[in-house]
Amino acid sequence: MGETITSRRTVLRAGAVAGAAAAAGVAGLTACSKGGGTSGSATVVGSGSTTGTGTALSSTSSASADGAATTPAKAADWTALAKDLDGLLIRPGDSRYDSARRLFQPQYDSLQPSGVAYVAGAHDVATCLAFARKHGVPVAARSGGHSYGGWSSGSGLVLDVGKLNSVTASGGSATVGAGARLIDVYAGLAGRGVTIPAGSCPTVGVTGLALGGGVGVTGRAYGLTCDNISSAEVVTADGKIRTASAASDPELFWALRGGGGGNFGVVTSLSFRTHPAAECAYGFLSWPWSKAAAVVRAWQAWAPSAPDALWADLHLLVWADGRTQLGTTVNYLGPQSELSNLVDQLAVAPSSVSLHTRSYLQTMQVMGGVSGWSQAASHLPGSLPGQNPSGRVTRESYGAKSDVFTNPLSEAGAEALVAAITRYPRTGPAGGSAGVAFDALGGAINRVGASDTAFVHRNGLFLAQYTANYPSGVTGGSGADRSWAWLNGVWSAMRPYASGQAYQNYIDPRLSGWEQAYYGANAARLRTVKRAYDPGGMFRFPQSVPLG
Image 1 (cartoon, rainbow, N blue to C red):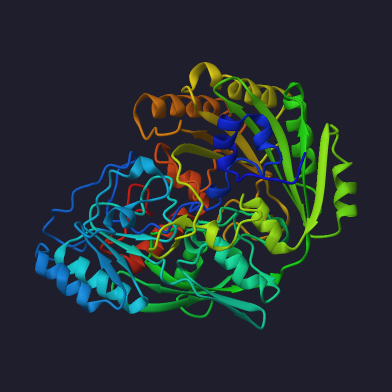
Image 2: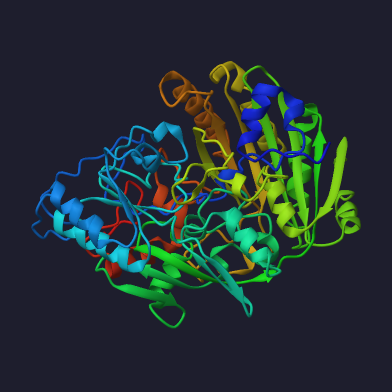
C-alpha cells in the first residue's frame, strides 16, 4: 500500500469512480463523521427546526418557547436585527444566501432558513436569542454544518459561529473559537507544538465535535475531545453569557461534555488542556476479503487492549459493482519500530503493510484525506466564514447508523456482519457505496467514569459506524431508500451482538429509543440540567434532550 490516503468519507466515492486502487491506504470509513458533529454532529440548537428527513418545520407560532406572547417578525424587524449585530446577517434575496444556507450534505439543500447570522461574539448570540424570543422565531446554531439529521438548520434563524475561529495556546491550555474547523485547530496549535484530541474530517467544527464527545485518532492516549475541555463560554436561553467550568455552573459544564450539541445554549468559545503534538508513526494494513470474518475477530482482540499510544480502525467497504476492501489504519504516538512490533502481534497477518513517520500535523492531514493540501484548500470552497476561496473539500450525502460494542463479536457475529455487508451490491443503489468502520476505544477514554461527564460510553471495546454513501447527485428518492434499506439490514444483523448504545455525534434521525442509546444512565441528569438552563425549551430539535 502506498502512502496516499483519501478521507474516511471520500474513500468510498473515490473508489466508486476510480476503482479499488484509488482507495488504497484509507483511514477507515468516514473522516467527516468524527464529529462529526458529528459530532460528528454539528452544534445543533434548534426549535423543532427539521424533521428526520430534513423537511423544515413551521415557524408561524405566536408564542415563544416559554409561552410568552410574541409578535411575528416583519422585514423591518430583520433589518433592525442586522443593524444590531456586529456580525453579518444574510437573508433570502441576498446573493450569498444559497451558499449561506447549505449544510455539508446536499440532501438538506431544501431547507430555507429565514436568516443566517454569522455572529461576531457572545453578545451577537444574545441579541439573536432576544430577537427569537420576541418574535417566536425558531433558532438553530451551526458550527461546521455536519449534523447527520440536518438539525443545524431549519425554517427560522441560523446562528453560525464560523466567524469565531481564533486558536491560541499557552501554558498547557488552548482557547478555541466555537466555529474553528478541525484543520485550523490542528494547524494553529501545531505551531505551538501542542494539540488536542479531535476528529479527522478537516471541515468539522470543533464545538459540534466536542459537545457530543469527540472520538479521534489520539483518543486512547489523550481522551475524548470533551474530556479535555476546561471551560466553555456559552449563551443560555435567557441571554446570559456564562463561563461554565468545574467551579462555575458545574452542572452545565458536566452536560456540555458529551450531552450533545444544541441542548443547553450556544457555545461561543472553548478552553482545552493541551498535549504534546508528538511525531506520529502511522500505517495501512490490508487483507483479502476472504479473511474478513477472521480479521474482525483478530482486530477486536488486538486494538482495544493495545497500549494507549496506539489507535486503530477496521474498515470493511463495498461498492455497488461488487468490489470489496478490507483494511485498517493505525496511528501510534511513538517510534515506527514500536508500531511495527505491535502490528506483528495481530493474529491474522496482513497481506500488505505500509508504515510511515510524519509530524503530528502532517499525520492529521493524512487522516483527514488532505495530505499535501494547503490549509486553505482543506475547507469547503466559498467566501463566507468557515469556507475558503481555495477550498477543495466536496459536499456529499449519506446515511449512517452506529453501535458501541462492549463485548467481542463471536464467530457467528463476525460472519453475520460480513454477510450483511456483502448484500449491498444486490440491495443498494447503482453507483453507491457503503461500509462499516470500527474505531478502537479503551485507554484514556475508558478510564473516565460513566457519570463523570455526560458521555456515558465508557465501557466500549470499539465504536461501529455503518455508512451508505448515496450515488452522485442523489439526495433522496429510491437511491436514498435503498441505501437506508441496506443500513437497516446490517444494523439489524448486529442486534444480537451490540450493546444498544449509540454515539450521539453520529446522530441517527431514524433511531428509536435514541435517548437511552445516546445517554444511558445519564439521561435523567441531563433532563434536570435542561430544565434548569432552558426551562422554556428554546433549544429543541427532534432528538434534543427532553424537558420532561
